[in-house]
Amino acid sequence: MSTKRCYYETLEVDRNADESKLKAAFRKLAMKWHPDRNPGDAASEIRFKEINEAYEVLKDGEKRAAYDRFGHAAFEHGGMGGGPGFGAGFASSFSDIFEDLFGMAGQRGRGGRERGADLRYNMEITLEEAFQGKTAQIEIPVSVTCESCSGTGAKAGTKPKTCSICGGAGRVRQAQGFFTLERTCPGCQGRGQMIEDACPSCTGTGRVTRERTLSVNIPQGVEDGTRIRLAGEGEAGIRGGPPGDLYIFLSLSMHQFFQRDGADLHCRVPISMVTAALGGEFEVPTIDKGQTKVKVPAGTQSGRRFRIASKGMPVLRSRQTGDMYVQVVVETPQNLTKKQQELLAEFEKLSSGATQPEAAGFFTKVKDFFGSRASQQ
Image (spheres, helix red, strand yellow):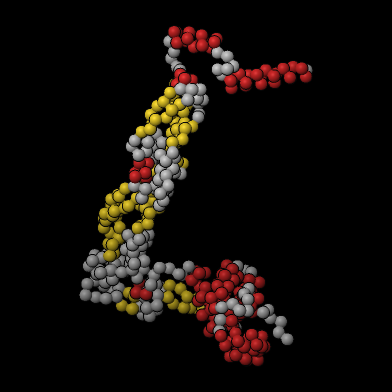
């Protein structure tokens, strides 16, 4: 009787798992238990072999049917072609995860058509520009397809030749024990082609650097750190490959009057002690280049906020608008004349708890506090 672990249990899948679930499970487990990721761990190597063996059987329809009917006995004594070991089938299984393990899944295709790199451009805008939105013109140095060779990298009148080492595949295989490793072709560096006579304009890369002027649409309501993507406006691909993208990163300059909190705007306005005591009004600017009046009721305390609805920033990609909050700060008079000092002193004599209820209440609590401590001593 076989003592091998059930293949479905080994791959941690149900018996009705389809091909995609099997492959996903194999990738996950094989990457976890691969010996290169667990150096010196003999248990990991054994586990990796079990995972590969299970996948070799279950991914093959005929072998899977036999296993479902007879179990491990279907492969004993030479059944089903000698069993699932580490023969030629292992290379196909291992190739399913090779690119994940070793980072071979790049952007390079056959013929050296490599996707161009993405580019970043930092742009600073004002709060007013973020409120209104704008169309900006930017100039950036960027790699574009070489016109002399049409991006092939080969001198006019010549063509790239297929690499004789890899036969145009861009990768070569090498057997190491029971592994069949695949690596980038050393002859063509993975491009599959070699250029014997390079284009003098681009030195064989298929691209040259040029200054480009681009138009960037900045929508209303953008925030600090907003990223705008311009597809296909990045670096040109190598030897005719597709271009990368350009990413515009926005930063907002500090405003002299407003502070932003999401879609809301905040500002602090100093008012005189008299205005705070007797009441009054003042005008403040708004982000839409207008102005609005703020009425201050009598007895207003420092730090009080007044809300002005719908005078904040627009919310990106919506019809909503934030609010504006005005915080008043009562300013203490300075550099008083002798007459002003006398008037304030007279006012202080006439003041009572009714005119300064918060202060009166506080000092009453202080008096009670010290009185209770004295009685305890």
